[in-house]
Structure formats: C-alpha cells, structure tokens
Image (tube, rainbow, N blue to C red; front, side):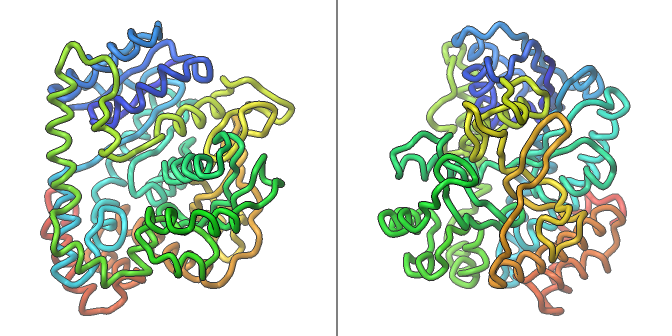
Length: 439
C-alpha cells in the first residue's frame, strides 16, 4: 500500500507517523511519501519519520519529495494537510478581523473565509493532478476549513472525505471519564465542521445506552472547563457543543480576550521553531511531548481508521471493515466514523450537496451518513445559516470577485452587518492579494 501526505513537511506529521507505526496491522503501509515544497522542513521531518518507523519496527519505506506529481503517482490514498501562506497568513487571519470587533480565527468568521479563498484553488489543483496520475486514489482532507474544502473536492467529482480530530478527541475524553475503552464510545455527533454538537454519548454503538446525562451530571465542570463555557450553559443545552461554538455563544467576550493576548498563530510559530530544532536531533526517534500542544491530537488514529476503511485493509465483519474510528468498535462492529461528506438528506433542512460532519459507515465506496434524529431549532437554525455562508464562501473561492466576498461575509452569523462586511472585505483582499489571482 502506498500513501502520500501532501504537506508532509508540517510539524503535525510526526503525530501521523507515530500512528502509522503503531497501527501498522490496521493500515499496512509499504511506502509513505511525504510531499512538500519546503525542502529544509521536509528533510527534518522525513529524518524523524524514518527514525520513528525504525524504533517501532515498521519496515515501510519513507520517501520525501518536493515533486507533487511524482509523490502522488500510484498512491492508494492522498492525505492533504496544507496551510497556504503558512503561519504568517494565519497571523493575519487572527488579527485584522479584531480591528472591526469581529472574531479573528483561522476557520471561523472573516479569517476562515480568507483561509478558504487561499486554500480551495490550491487544493483543487492538487486533486486534479492526483486524478490525472491515479484516478482511483482516495483524497482524505485534513486541510481547514475542512467543510468548505471537502465540498469543493466533492463538487469537482473527486473521491474525497473530510476529516477533523474534534470528534475523536471528545471520544477519547469521554472514554476516560467513563472508565471504558474508546471503542466502546459512540458519539451522536452532528453539524458542520467546527460547528457540531454531541447530542448523545452511547456505549457499544449507535443503539447503545445514552450516558450523556450521566456524563454531564458527574463531569459537567470538567467538560465545561474544556469548552471554556460556563457549566450552567452546558447544563441548559443538555448537549456538548464543540469548543468552536464558544465563538458564537460568547462572541464579544472572546473578542475582548483575543485583543489582550498573543495570537494563537504567534504561539504556534514559536512552537514550530522549537519542534523543528528537536526534529533535527538524530537521537530523537519518537514524537516529542511538545507536539501535543501543537494541536491535532489523535489525528493519526482518525486518519488510520479512515484510510483503512476506505482502502478495505482492516479486518472485515459482515458489514465491511471494522475499525475503531471516531465512535465505532474494532471487534465485530460496523466502521462508524465521524467524517465530512455530502448531506444527501441526512439533515433534511439542508441541500443534498451540503457537506455535513456526522457519524457515517465508511467502506470502499466511501462514507454513508447514519440517520440523525430531528434537531432542535436552536441547532438546525445555526447549521442552516452557516451552510448558506459556506455555499457563498465556496462560490467566492471558485469565482473570485469583491462582491462575492462581501456577500459571504454579510451572510455569516458572526458578522451580518453591511458596514462590517464592507470593511472586512477590503481588509481581507488587502491582506491576501498575493494569494488571490483575481484581486
């Protein structure tokens, strides 16, 4: 099996390598290609990757290259983990929206739109080159904003599934609080990427007992603390929102907080510098503890589970491969995993070609969402609003133009005022002109 990672020079990559090494029986990789134009970073990450494989006894070959076409040729699956513009662009995404009193964040609000505009054309170009080289390859997208990018890939006819680590992180957290194994925990996870709620936490699978009320009663303070929301708000909702919902439920307070602290981009840039220095140490042969602070926890497990199911490499039960992804069971269960894929009637108030983030049965034919009970209007209303924004954002990313950017910003529930949208449009274009061919 040959896998390619585009963006392989990312400091995230050793997390992925560690998972590939530990879970080699689930996903037996014979060759892993790390593709990145940044040769200096790629050399450091590739060296550490080989040492991790060697330490853990993985006999797969690791290749590094700056040649995209050669790197993806013959790949069974291609993982995308890009950041167009790097941390410098992220720093801007997190800064200039605050000047208008709006959230500055890399996937939400005006900053998220800027990232989508930079990213979608690049990802579509990569995907087209993958298709020319190997039309049967699956594309697994971990590149933010995952929902918009995955929708762009699917609408262009690519074999693509979007992946985020939020659900698997919550699964692991809840399993620890409950004293069970992660494979015993199935999440009733619903929404859009970075706009989701856990409406149930079940033991043993989608038909298992819902222990969410028990979790909230016994561990509500811990859960609310992780979300950085008041305990009483979580109790009143009776669900566990993604921590990204804080930007909606406490917008003004978060804006004030962000104005008084260093940006996350600045923190990550400093961390990346330190990590790359560590990666250059020839004695280092495992992922360093510092990497856990970089983000992307459990990304490797989620990626392995998803790739194994798509490629049919896991042990199969009566319903196909059986793996332990974001909520499924490894032994004897269906391959339920939280992914981003076409709605196709799952949420009846959304278009079929909207991309939702839900539990799905994943196999060689792709991802099929599991049924979702009718949602409270408190959640469905916000989902519908943000879906409309994502449609307009994708249109702006594909076709360009100031007016399309303005309409996308005006539609976003965290902006919604024409004066803000006008100002933010001008600033978005000014800060991203080098990445926008139409500007």
